[in-house]
Image (cartoon, helix red, strand yellow):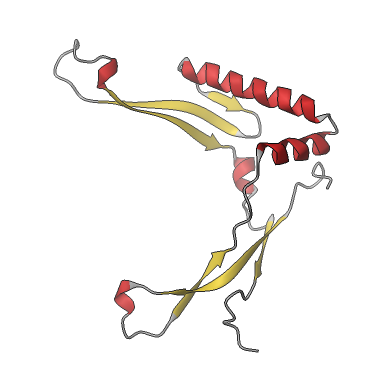
Length: 145
């Protein structure tokens, strides 16, 4: 698949699912769409896809992936936000307790450490309706012919 010209297009399969809500006693049945999830994509799948799309050996993709991970890890661990081109920004967020004195404000007062990811617009746009086609399938045999 040549992804360089227009980007990959996708098809998400969905099926009608009966909805049973606590406040619906005595009400007619309702339905909503639920999506059929695909399998989990592994590192090997990503590496193979990227190598084919970029026309480079898989070993080059592995080396670049490891170097990118190491760079993100190093810079985030040192308090930087890391902006990865075309992907997004990684940053570390810390929460701490409010304490009475400056002496109490130490590493023990830190209550939460989180790595945050903020995707780029281009990545968010990949989920836009122009790129993903929805196909309705009748897994439950609900449609009457």
